[in-house]
Image 1: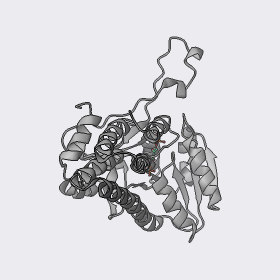
Image 2: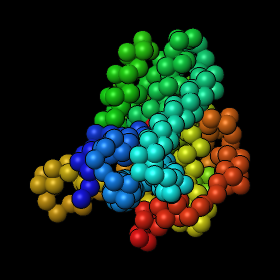
Image 3: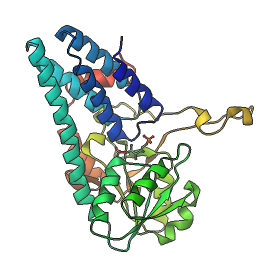
Length: 318
Ligand code: RUB
């Protein structure tokens, strides 16, 4: 039996009611936090329920190392406290999950501070999809400068609308376009910015499908492309030789299949941008080229037993 809050969050992530790598990880942790608030469960029951919750949540979206890292964090902190008496165990774990949320917020704030420096007064920036990290960069920049953002609608689920609405609330000028108009408008653009779901060991960026095409167009026009992403987006599984899976979503998000009987409709959620198209990655540690970012992270990331468990669950081994 999975706790209703966990089931609900799992469904919301799958249906993209909760979207964006950072928020997916954050809300998965929040669901486990809600579970921990149930005072009527014994320590043994809590451990069992949390383990089940992690197993379910980690499979909610496949192309999400930040989610995997968050679930490994839950398992690790739970294991570290398993010898504590029941109520102290519960309270201590509650605190540690609150720390996770706080730490993530601090990281994003730091990225916003660093990244906002890339946007100059009078700039036109182009972006694709919706990244909570990038929105913080825009927010910070909008407090100091005036700029315009060209926002792609982001087919098939129109995450661009969310980006446009939030930018308008910040008082930023928005030009809203269909995805395929990105190249047409590139001559007006000073800077291309996106978030990322994954940064692989070979320095590739995985983000919303369409990101790579816009990066190609930006390169053609000499427009710099910066990826705004925390170090949680680096996938240590790819150092171990696992290939990052690209999520394929239901074709009905693209078109009602009955309108095209006989056609194969494909709906990949993400695409892969090679490092030579990326000017830099803006992380909480600073701005680096993709190769430097990966070389720093590869030497730092340690795959412990919990992360290994999660990787094996996510990649089909358990
Ligand atoms: C969202 C997307 C975002 C990244 C980064 O795709 O591609 O750019 O997840 O987001 P989807 P964040 O809508 O399919 O989840 O900066 O919030 O982690």
